[in-house]
Amino acid sequence: MSKVSVIIPTYNSAEYITEAIESVLRQKHKDIEIIVVDDGSIDNTKEILKPYIESKSIKYIFQANKGPGAARNTGIRVAEGEFIAFLDSDDLYLDNALSKKVDLLMRYPKISLVFSDYYFLQDDCNISTKVPFYSSKKMLDYLSPAIVEKTGDYYLFGREFYKHAILNHIAIHTSTILVRSKCFNEVGLFDVILRVAEDDDMWFRLEKKYLVSFINEPLSIYRKKSSGLSSNVEKYCIDGIVYFRKLLSDKEIQNDHELQKHIKNSISYRYFELGQYYFERKQIRLSRKQFINSVHYKLLRTKAWLYVLLGFLPDSVTSVMKGIYERMKIR
Image 1 (spheres, rainbow, N blue to C red):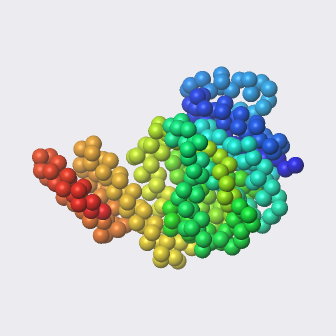
Image 2 (image 1 turned 180 degrees about the horizontal axis):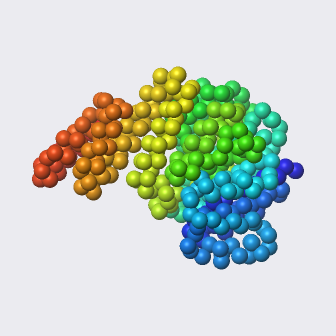
Image 3 (image 1 turned 45 degrees about the vertical axis):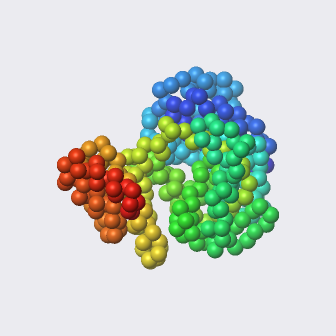
C-alpha cells in the first residue's frame, strides 16, 4: 500500500482541527502520515492536539506565522509519502477520499494530479441539502474541450487543461487534491509571497507540466468561514493582482492572445475592486490610483473612469452620482 502524506496547515483553528484530523484517521486507505504544521497559532491549538501528538497519530511542527504556503512547504519538506494531499484545518475528508484518488494514480502512472468534487459548507450549514460544488457550477461543461478520456466518474484532461480552467474561472480546491510527491522536485514549492492565491499559483504550475484527472464525486467538505483569509478584501485583491501578473509573465501565456486578454481583464477588475474598497473608506487618492491601474489593463472599464471622476467631486455630489452609476450597472 502506497503511503500518503496529508499536510494540514493550521492557524488558530482549535475549534475545527480535531474534526479535520479525525476525518483523515477514518480513511479507508490506512497507509497515511498526518503532518500538522502550526503556523504560529496563539490560541489553544497545541493543547487540543496534545493527545494526537502523544499517541504519535500526527507529526506536529510549530513555526512562526508565515502564511499557508510556507506552512505547506514545511510539510512537503518532511513528507515521506509517495503521494501528498493537502487538507485545510477547517475542511473534512469523506471516508473514501484518499482510497479513490490513490487507486486512480496507481492504475494510471501517466497522471500526476487528481482532484475531486466537494461539498461547500457555509458557516456550518447542513450539507444534506447541498449538491456537489463543481456539478452545481457545471464545471465539466466548461472543461469539455480539455477532456481526452472518461472512465465511469474518472475524467482525464489533456495538456491544455490549464487554459480552459483559467478562461472559465475554475479553481481547484486545495482539500480535494492528491499529487505525486516527486512533482514538487520539478515545479518547486508554494510561493510564500502569496497568502491568498498561493494554491492557484501552485496548481497552475502543476497543470502546465503534468496530466490532471478529476473524480466526479464529492470526496471532501469545504467549510467556508466569514473570518477566513479570502474574506479580507484588500489582501484578496492585492494577492490576486500579484498572481495574475505572474501568469502574464509565463511564456506560453504570452503567446496566447485569448489568455492574455482574459488575464488582463481579471487584473483590471481586481484593481477596480481594490479601488472601490479604498473609495468606501474615503481614501480617495489611494482609490484613484487603483482605478487608473484598472483602466491601464482594460481601457474601456467605464465605471473605473466614473469613479476617478467621483474622486474629484464634493461628498454631497458624490453620493448622488454614485447611486446613479450603481443603478446603471456600468462596468
